[in-house]
Amino acid sequence: MSSATTISVENASGTLEVNPWLIGVVVSLAAFMEVLDTSIANVALPHIAGSMGASNDESTWVLTSYLVSNAIVLPISGFLVSLLGRKRFFLICITFFTVSSFLCGLAPSLGLLLLFRVLQGAFGGGLQPMTQAILADTFPPEKRGLAFALYGVTAICAPAIGPTLGGWLTDNYSWRWIFYINVPVGVLAVILVSQLVKDPPYLVRKKGREASFDFVGFGILAIAVGALQIALDKGQEDDWFGSHFITTLLIIAAVGLISLVIWEWFHKEPIVDVHLFKLFNFMSCSVMFFVVGIVLFSSTVLLPQFLQTLVGYTAQKAGMVLSVAAILLLILLQVVGRLTTRFQARHILAFGWITLALGMYVTCKRIDLLISFGGATWLRIVQYLPVGFLFVPLTMAAYVGVPKNKTNAAAGLMNFMRNIGQSVGTSAVTTLIARRSQYHQSVLAVYTRSPQCNVAIAELATHLSNAGFDLYSAQQAALARMYSILNAQAQALSYIDVYWLLAVTSSLMFLLCFLLEKNKPGASGEVQVH
Image (cartoon, rainbow, N blue to C red; front, top):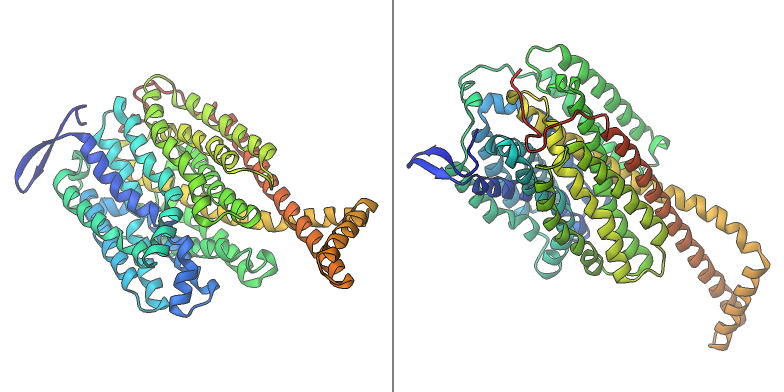
C-alpha cells in the first residue's frame, strides 16, 4: 500500500518518489479519453453519413460497433491482467486506442471506419476498469474516496461534455477531428503511464504464470453481448418483438448470458469471474451501477432531445444547458470524496438515490413546452448533481469484501454493468417516448371533437383568412396547426412519464442501500485477501 504522500516507482531511470495524485490524474486522463468517445460521435453521424455516401441508419453502426467491442472486453479485463500484467495491459490499451483513433480520422470509407471503431472500442474497454483498479491500489483507504472522485469526473462528466465538444469540432473543423483529438492525449498518457505506474506486489508474483485462455467462454460472451447491443440499438427502429431479427437477437442474448454464467461458474480459470456475485455488496452495487448507467445516460439524452425537438433549441444551446450542471458536479465530487471519510458509504448512497428521485419528481412537475433557458438549466442541475453522491460511495462500497487479487476483475464487471445500463437506458427512453406519445395522442384526440376545440379551429381559420388565405386553405392550415399542438403536447406528456419511471426506479435503489454491509468511514473499500 502506498503512503498518503509519495510512492516509490522503479523505471529505466532508477527509483522515483511520486505523488499518488499525479498517478491518479494520469490514469484518469486515459479513462476520460475513452469515456468521451462513447458520446462524442453522436452529433457527427449526419456529417459522417453525408461525407461517405451512407444512409443515416448505416451511420449509427459507428456507435454500435464501438459499444459492442467495448462491452465484450470490459468483463474479461481481469483475466487479461492476469495474463499480461496490469501495467503492460494498460499501456497496450492506451497505445492501440490512440492508433485506432488516428485511423478512424483517416478512414476513407464507412467499412474501414467501422473496422477501426471496433478496434478502438476493444482497446478502450480496458481503460476504465484499469484506471479504477490502479486508483484502488495506489491510494490508502482513507484517501480512496477522493481518488474515486477524480475518476468520477471521467465517468460522469465526459458523457455530458462529449456531444457539445463533438458538435463544436464538427461545425468548425471536420468530423474527423473528434477522433484526432485523442492522439496527443494518448501519446502523453503512454509516456507518463510508462514512467509513473507500477504493478502491485500481488500482481508481480503472478508474472510468468501460464493462464489458459477460455475460448468457449469468450465465444459465448462475444455472441451474447454482441446480440444484446445490436438488439438494443436497432430494437425501436425495427419494432422490437414485431421483428423476427430483433426477437432472434434477444433470444440469443438471453440464452448466451445464462450459458456464460453456468460455464464460467464451473470453469477452473474463468474469463469472467462470476463468483464475485456471491458477495452481496458487490452484487448489489453492480445492480446499482446498472441503474446509474440507465439514469445517467437516459437523462443526458432526454433533456437535450426535449429542448431541440419540442422547444426549438439549437444543439449548441441545448449543450449549454448541460454544461452548467457538469461544472458544478466537478466541485461536488471533491466534496463527496471528503464525506466518505466521515459517513458510511451506504448512507451517502441513500441520500444520493433519494435526492435523485426528488430531482426526477421535480422535473415531472416543472417541465413543459414554455420552459425557459434558466428553468431548463435548473432542472438539469437537480437531475444531475445527485449522481455525484452515487458514483464515489458506490465504487467504494462495491470493493468491500472483495479480495485484493480480484480488484481488476471487479472493476471490469462493474464498468460492464454500467455500460450495459447505458445501452438499456438509451433504448428504453427511445422506445418509451415513441410508445407513450402514441398513447397520449390517442387520448388527446378525443378532445378535438369538443365544442371548445371546434371554436378554436374556427377562430384560427378566421385569422388566417383575414391574413390572405382562401377559406379552404385557411381551414386546412388551422387543422394542421391544431394537430401540431396536439402532437407536441402528447410528446411532452411522454417525457413526463419517463421521468416518473426514473423517479420510481431511484426510490427502489434508495431502499436497497440499507441492505448493504456497514463500513468504517475512512476505510470503505478496504479489500481483504481471503
